[in-house]
Amino acid sequence: MRQGALELDIVARRGPLVVVVEVRSRASGGYESALASVSVAKRRRLLHATDRLWRRHLMGDASVERVRIDVAAVRFEAGVTVVEYVEGAVVGGD
Image 1 (cartoon, one colour):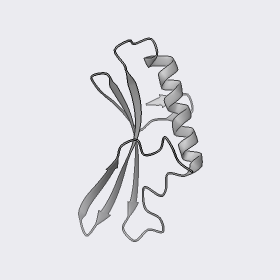
Image 2 (spheres, one colour):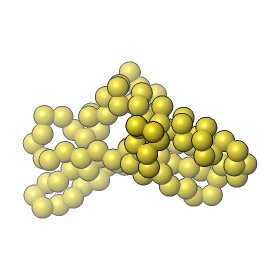
Image 3 (cartoon, helix red, strand yellow):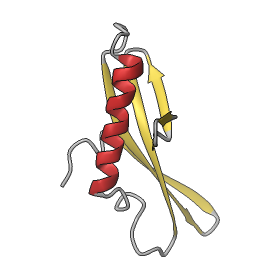
């Protein structure tokens, strides 16, 4: 979902919870893990895009109680896809 020049990979809803998911992937043997690739700058852009989503689309919806940002880290190892999913992964940080 695009928020101006900013992009959110996945926006999903279950009842009163809206979840923004940042999807990162790396091949096996890469220099850094997919989770480690969520830099401080990326966190700022993600928070900014999520804030814009809130202000433009969700704030007036009384059925939305909260918004969470998660990360899905995908890696490929010996023909197997491995997904590590971290809830609330990028809200805090460095």
